[in-house]
Image (tube, rainbow, N blue to C red; front, top):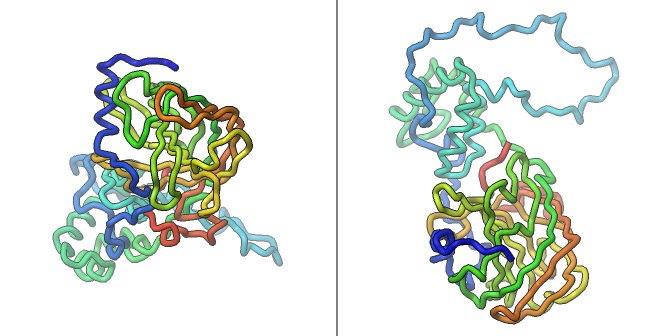
Length: 351
């Protein structure tokens, strides 16, 4: 096991303090979903640029001629055709609003990224609409209020359509491989010394463009605890660590194995209460409780050796693990949108 300096360790321990023991990661996220149709922030994103350019003319947007348009072959059934918007859509004011609707409440970085994907014209229209909307519809964040009070920009931004746009999470959302070893097991607590932490990832993979094991430092540890849903479990944790700011980062990866199943052999990872283990990728808040879930895993892994004892006598070696990752907003096995079933909040969509 690699060791890290006590200075790095002390900073890392700030991450684990306050996580709490024995709480279920399936607690409902206390967020009001009633306002989900409106943009996810009440201010123009920080990436906003000063409005010094001339207002774009109609010639900035090329028009497709009838001759250039593709005409499907006669009799061709295009019912299964891909109807998702092309990249140009996300650069428009409507696309910026629609993209922002896929951000979780308070995720200003996500909203800023949506704004940053906009063209100069799209950003300009968005800023002018947003300024009017925030001023005139602060108490009524609806498409109806936008149309009544911000008619000019509302029309340019197709606000009603943007509010109704549904962000689609791909399924599967990503994949991961599990392989690693632990030579120390914590007992319902979090690390307090260097020999309790490893800096070698036990999970590698990705969700869309996000890597689960960063190119920098990664911190992992193993602990025995009790979960409200699964009872006695052994949890393997993994988190990226920023050496410049000396702080842990998201996403957090958790492999939760039922203690009775933590024995040599092949094991399943799933979503039901009968599953031997769960695989979770999530984001944490300032107190490091999980606030939203990027994905749940479905697959299998192998335990090569296990001695589930607290302290340095404990050990666990994993190999051959492969899981497909699914956003709780789109898990085909559970009928599609499973956020209500799992009682969780999905994290913002990663493009």
